[in-house]
Amino acid sequence: MKTAIEVRGLVKRFGDVEAVAGIDFDVRDGELFGFLGPNGAGKSTTINVLIGLARPDAGTIRISGIDCSTNPKAAQHLMGVVPDESNLYPELTGFENLCFCGALYGMTRRDRESRAHDLLEQFGLTGAAKRKFGGYSKGMKRKLTIAAGIIHSPPILFMDEPTTGIDVASARQIRQLIAELNRNGTTIFLTTHYIEEAERLCQRIGFIVKGRIVRIDTVQDLMRQTDGRHIVQFAVNHGAARLCELIATEFPALQCQAVSDMAIRIESREPVHIGPLVRLIEDSGAEVTEARKLQPSLEDVFVEITGIEASVMKQEQEKNKMGSGR
Image 1: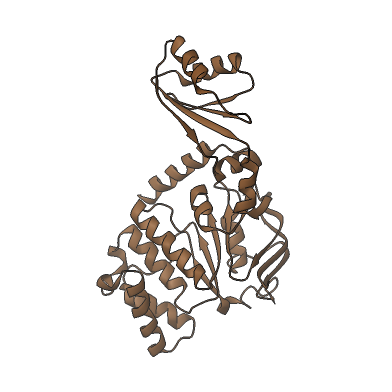
Image 2: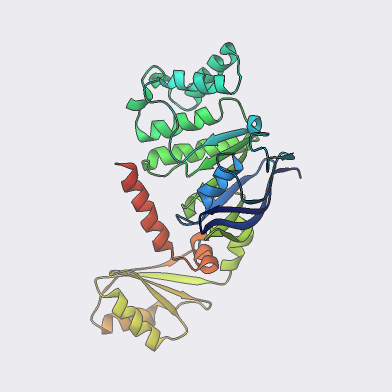
């Protein structure tokens, strides 16, 4: 299979900080490749180097076989970019923004206007075509930013956190658009810290932590790590941390985590017998309001490989949502 993106020994430093520490990876032609990690892991720095916004300190980059290490703009005509913050003009209408981006890529007036109309219809923005971009909702802004990134029909699309800070319905629509683009043959390099998003969309995923890639694999092979794992979650009326201490003492073979003050998560390589645990919890004076078995997820794999708790990622997600509302 052809390689769309080839990276070897990529290093990027900011002063004494090595934001990207000698990473290697390939993205196959037609693949939707996810780059997953917490804030500060090096995701955005990597994407900025790949698209030519930042120069690497070491390493090589090839885009569709073109060496971009010394000339970052050599393959720009093959790329579309959807940045984490919109780069469109608030004083221009949606239609004008798309046409302007088309002009930057050398499209004729006729071609860019025709393509702009098609994209506005595809993204459900025809009714807002003549409205100024500054008056768009967050979800509409993300859609138009994606449309601008593909105005010239690039074979390779870089997307940096495309669904951060928008409402659930808009995020769902954007994921559907991303999947459709990929089905139609676009190679997509997607950075995200939404684990569920990566699991739904991507064929392969690279985990990056502190500038280093710790694992690259298909979602299917990553999920094999959860084979034989049994998980049960209990909702309780109070005291989850104390209950975990009690369970660890009475059932040392089980792993117990307080998800919140009113929820505990039990994990084991053997089937979990719920009855004895419920009796122990209720004998301690707490009440079980719900007990349910869970299917292991990519989130569990991420925690196991990186050592970063999913709760940390969720806190970052909430910070991003709050920040996007400023």
